[in-house]
Image (cartoon, rainbow, N blue to C red; front, top):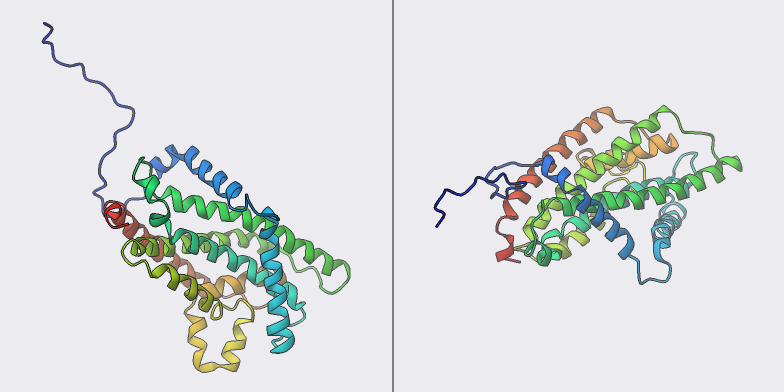
Length: 290
């Protein structure tokens, strides 16, 4: 009988429990990059797979919303948008806002929606919400094409002057802030949803209310002028600065608040890091409560 000691083997991968209080583990995420791309492809292909209009819903939703806002807030309520056509003003705010709400709403249900997958196979759990943020970038790109199509139309007929300049280079930074902020808040909410299911309904309602204090359908200065007592709702809302700056970059309408962007950057980083800590803690034991 061969009683020699077993030969030491060098393992390719070793799975250990996560004991760190804070861990992003980008190296492991990069190792599973093919799975990340697979989830992105799945989300894009299947979301409107059995619908009649398919991906056209990416275009219909912001167009109908912009038309509704133009009729109600600009024509009926009389909100002025300067020299800029009201429809284009609203469309610019809606597109960037939709990216945030899509990231938040879809990541806030991560654990409950994917419990069956998480319970069967191991992969970095953060890949799932990250795939949602990347998928929504595709939607954002399609909607931006529509925006620039209408922008070109208004430019050709002489309704607007060319407003695009070097500040356009700042727009990807704003998109990144929106994505990270939506991801951070989504991870916090998804961790809480494992115990408190009612939060799913509260988030959908809360996001609708949040839109009205995020300067999506009006300039930031309007609230400060008409309702000075409630100006703090705008001043301390990081989303309002992103929406306002987006319109400033795309349409040269509104103001560029440097201090507001710095505040938004700090707020976003804090929310993301806190969300990551909560997410990492929840993924260890969520399967017992979902």
